[in-house]
Image (cartoon, rainbow, N blue to C red; front, side, top):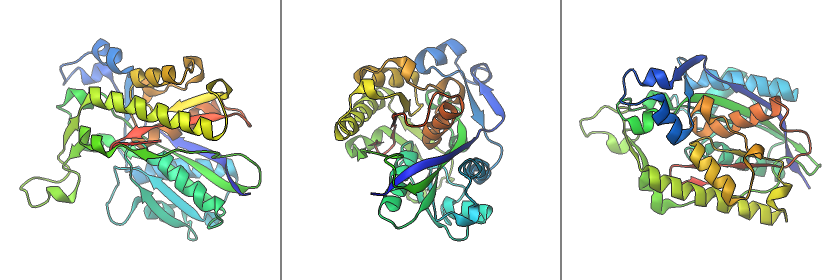
Length: 316
């Protein structure tokens, strides 16, 4: 049987830091208000396009895997803040890499885009369509931010990370997954102004209004992620105490903590980067994964559980 092993990883974080104290200079907020509700202390702001962040993170991942860009067979780019709607983000990365053999596609399921992309690429490797793939999760959410809305402006940041998957006959890589969508709740998280339905209405596309129903999102996120985690554990006949590390979507420390409690997972086995990165949407899970590997918290052969939720209302 063919599996899709994770053989390379890399990230690119913008150097510009926006702290809670910075936000307090133009919003009615302060560090205590933000930290107590979200766990966030700072986030990064990009002054270059998403394509540049993705190029750096992918080149680092390819170097880690020892794979030449010319040999890449598939690029799956998970994001919802594209440089352009057409042509797609993945084809731009293909051109920058010189990966002329690579099929290139985008996946947009908001904050779960990396997990959905990872599942897609792994499936194509397992079925023999390709032998390797680059999977990217990255966003420049701040480009669409409503900086007058305290409820969302304090939450989001920019960043990008990539992984390389390669075919192997060893039982490793992505071993089980559960993807889902609670579409009844899709109206709880909407960025108005980012789509063709806003055309011809006398408004400027890209000037956004955020609908963000925090309490409902919290409830749905915890239920969606904990349910998906329970499902994959059952598929592999595992219990929570056999998982070495959990890498959750870094949306809010309260959500991370509540989900860990539902899984009966101690927080010392949960990676937390939200305090330094904020919510980087589809970038948050691969960024946290990269940090966990480089810090030595993930070792070869360990079992790692990835979880996320996002607009739509998607989860995995």
